[in-house]
Each structure stands twice: as structure tokens, then as C-alpha cells.
Amino acid sequence: EVQLVESGGGSVQAGGSLRLSCTASGFTFDMSDTAGWYRRTPGKECAVVSTISSDGSTYYRDSVKGRFTISQDNHKNTVYLQMNSLQPEDAAVYHCTADPPVGFGGSWYGPCAWGQGTQVTVSS
Image (cartoon, rainbow, N blue to C red):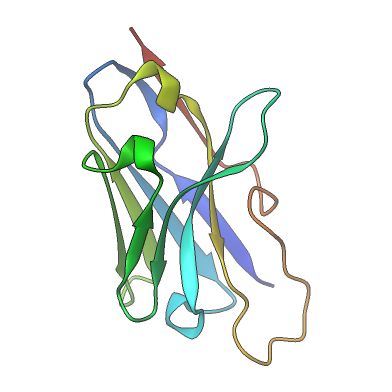
């Protein structure tokens, strides 16, 4: 069974830091072209935060550039999101996602649909 399990969320004050982790089972991140993080706030759509591709290239939404850093550890089969200088507008449920490996024939989910995600709360 393929799973993505997020952890590391919590409650911090503005200016604080958190590191989110996403561990995969049933496949390895190095089999996917792209992995990344999305977030959802109540009443809003699932929005991309950051992605990392197999060639090491990264993408960040404008509002997190310079504050967030995405990384991938293939030995641990884990994708991280280091979040610094957190602001109240960063508060959301953060979800990990990945592209299905080439040739994968089972069920696969889109962004924000894998599981519960991890809650990030930022107080001002």
C-alpha cells in the first residue's frame, strides 16, 4: 500500500520555525519526477507551496521564497520543508504529494488528498 505520512506541524509564534517531514511507503521518492508540499486553509483551495524535482530543481510560491526550503533525503525516503520566519498567513494544513512512478498501476491521489496532513498554526 502506498502512503505519504506528514509530521512536524505545530503551533508557533510569528517569526518562529518548523520543519515538516513526509515519509513515503510503498514507493520511493526517487521514483517520482516531482515531490512537494501543498497547503489548504478553511474555505480555500489546495495551493502549492514548494516542489522538488528529480533533477534537484525547486519551486517556491512567491510568498514563501527566502523563508522556506524544500529538501529530499532518498536514504530516508523523506521530503522535508524547513519553514522559517513563519507568519500568520502561513497557517494551514500542509500536505505532501508526489508524482506517481512511471508504470505505477495502483491508486494514486492528488495534492491535499493523501491523508490528514499536518497542521501549522502561527500566532501573531
